[in-house]
Image (cartoon, rainbow, N blue to C red; front, side, top):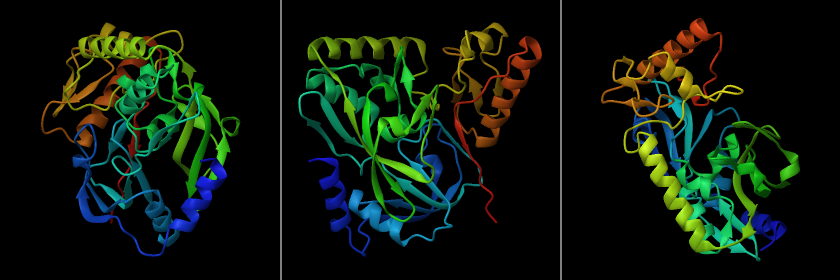
Length: 308
């Protein structure tokens, strides 16, 4: 199906009645990989893309929105979120091969599933996504990368959704990807993407995925609540090296602790709050800047509460 017919089908298919699930005062600690975050005033799990479009057409245009996939790379305030949270993981999950070298995936597909799907279809290049604990929507929004690969190196086109429920098809050149950031049209969220990959040996790709995951397990605190890497790497250096060199591994505030396995990870040792994590992030930033002159920049997205 081409982009035009995809948009037409969505626009024609969505009606006025919502078919998804509403939850009220839902603790976001249940939906974030750090296991912290206060309640969302409202949380909506759409039935599918058509249902999500219908929701956007009905929401108050001033309603605060938070899009949530697997909840990694996200720090939600202890007071929660004063608007509507939209869950994409498990709902926007369409994934298919298109033609010889393209994959189409909706924003809720996990990065790991996408990498394995490509390998099983003898398409290569995105093996690195297997080690990124998030969804395609998040990977697009921050140009997620690891082991030398970056998401936007493979994007051919995307479909986006705005506050009025309008779906747009955009090509990759409508965006300017950078290191852990992407600049593009404002007021739109990623609904789906088409990736252009290279034909190759699927078995070799699966072997590379296994090797990357083994390396990740050996060097990162896999299985412990974290957000992934907390800080961007400064030019010509690595945040983990700087933090480790200053003896900050194991530093702890409340239930938040710098991992002794990888210094660019903060883990929830149990009972941590968003405030604990924020204070530890600030302590690391201040210590590194005071002793090296380098100001670390968090790549984690902070969501302020401000509930009345």
